Length: 183
Length: 183
DNA sequence: TTAAATGCAAAGACTTTGCTGTTAT
DNA sequence: ATAACAGCAAAGTCTTTGCATTTAA
Image (cartoon, rainbow over all chains, first blue to last red; front, side):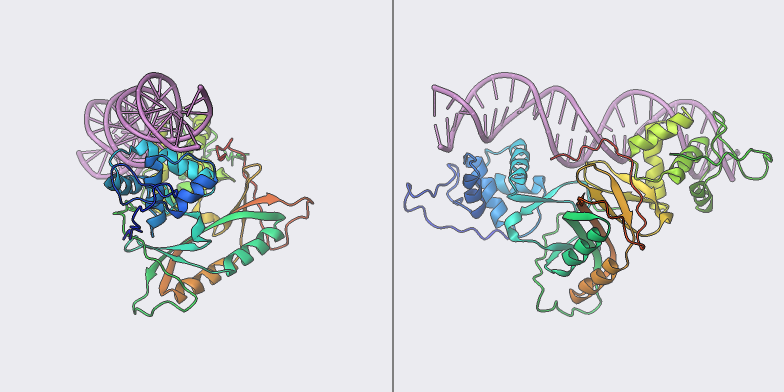
């Protein structure tokens, strides 16, 4: 969906820069986090940061490369790989595994949430809920552990009717990645 | 640990066979499941089935190959890969992903349980608990889904004291696979 | 007898890396 | 000026597969 910010670059010295190849890439939340983490903001990195910030789904490297390339062709997949790795180490990005062999990414700043994968369509829906972490923390405790992190993925099928989600739910549907989720 | 059954092959026609190369492999629970699923019981498959049945941990293909080869050298990794894939399709094996790039396996017949990965040692401890599935089923329902399956992994650290697990817990510690789980 | 299974090596899919040139600071 | 970064292609890791051969049923 990529709704770009498109603010005009009125003041070149105000920190807001753009990629030499296209004028549509501006500073983004993730680009700012990069700076805060002492990373150099190259044109490529700025584009990738922009793509990541705009992403409302969980793109894999190939998809990120596709989107970034569309904005600036001077980007190689190696750079995308290196960038997501770096950003993951910095805690800016979170790597996900929804099955299908390739890693998928999303901004950490999106807050903590879980994923439910529609087994029929491959679509990923996010949801927030405090109960799992409470339960799992208790379980870990009973086993003599302190919970450091956890992973939950639900694989499910849309129920017949289309009863919409309850109020506490924020459901962001993924774009389908022609996923190779075959048997 | 591999505590082999070692029953002497007194009656060659009684269905209990062994690998031509070594006398220690006999029918195993998983071998029986193979037969029930109409699979041919070759010497290699019998050995692999035996190894899987004896495994108390979650070996990856390389480890399975190592253990199987120790019992019968006429086994190739390709066969191990093909076998675990086949057995997974038949529902006999469950594939796990504990992070680290390689798939790990365990017998499905071990029943439903979850895993807690010790982030310090890499050891995997199993535990049973009915609450997560109840909670997650409810959550899925609220989102308009019917839960098909789910995945839960806890990453945790042993708590200072060694307060043992509560009564409802069956903790099976994994052998450490020199896991490359470092970031 | 014959479909299934195996071995071996080649190939695939995804990811990392060595090296050299470029660039943000 | 210089450490970080990027591109490219080679290499690495895990897994699958084509093909000729063997084998269980």
